[in-house]
Image 1 (cartoon, one colour):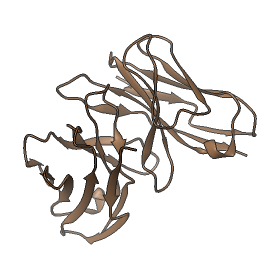
Image 2: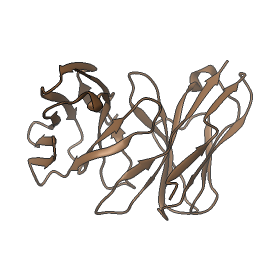
Image 3: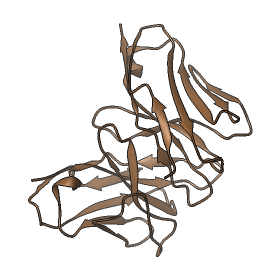
Image 4: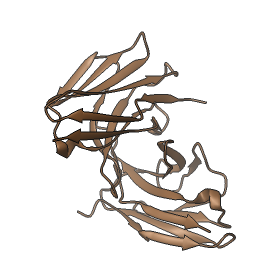
Length: 113
Length: 112
């Protein structure tokens, strides 16, 4: 069981470039999430997917798009990267109730110059 | 804006001491309050969680105290160890797809 995997681990982009962050889980969870982590701000939800085929905005969706490719995979796309998107990005998947636990991947550290 | 406010931002405790981290929330609809632990370079991992029908939950050296009327909850780490040095996040959610609202985080350092 790999749990939640994310690629790449590190990425440097120039302003205006695009990229896709990949996430996959092997725990057969329905719900998946994308967060960004910035110093002093905790983790903030970008987008989430409650089930295959559905996605919805979180707290900070501007500048991002997502695709729930299948039950395992949930990708995050930056169409035109900006320096304000420099952050550490975490993907998570969630068990259903009653345990209601989110399992996080190892993160992608993104720098936009 | 739904918020969860966490304090202190950083905490230094001697080995064997008690670490206490506090969180306050605004939305009375929240019904799930987890604490996550994060080591450098890793993703957060669930440490312990509580629902508002109980006032306290204990798992080993970790205890959550919950005060519904004050809209506050706290994490107590008894007999703190250097291996507990990490960043701790409180969070809250309610029945909308499990979306978590996180606090700002507390960097705990336990000195030997």
